[in-house]
Length: 229
Ligand code: DC
Image (tube, rainbow, N blue to C red; front, side):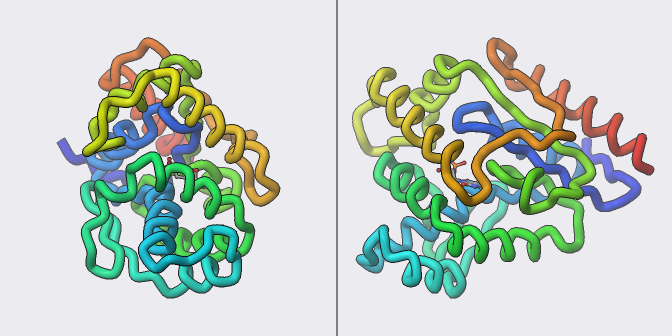
């Protein structure tokens, strides 16, 4: 059932790949009647468009200009880039790696963070990413940091039907090492690396089924929103 909160909250959900952010954020947005914005999809969309246009992935000025001009439409099911449905195309191993490179560039981040703030200006949204609670919306009403053990995160990613479509099922060890490399890149980049905000609530999803995590996160969200209203 949809439930409207008295205000239009901003709910930040951060954490590493495979922690369950996508499924949990969508469910929370649905339960609260909020919009859902997947900021990872924005970095992926820029990487996809760059590949599509044949831009070099180390050309920061060109990628920054692309991040400014590219037309993006995101909802809880679909990602459109310049009107093309890239929902599936942005979830390949190639785009995983390209998006992590693009996301290391400070000036690309600056542009996308500005666009993310514009999406959230009116509130009423659940935004998922790596730096939402630390950089994009440091004053978010609720900040959740989802985590899970590296084994569980790799297993989830390997069995995620939205990843690696069209290719043979990925070997768990390959997924684990690719995930590890990407996490390392996300945590060690200079510009807003993945870290937990001091006022975020950490939820470890290891061994908890999705419904259990959603329930736990919804309880935290309701409690925090009640405390703020
Ligand atoms: O969440 P994801 O795997 O779709 O994210 C794609 C890439 O973008 C990944 O390398 C992390 C990065 N990212 C980021 O740096 N900041 C965000 N707010 C969201 C994603």
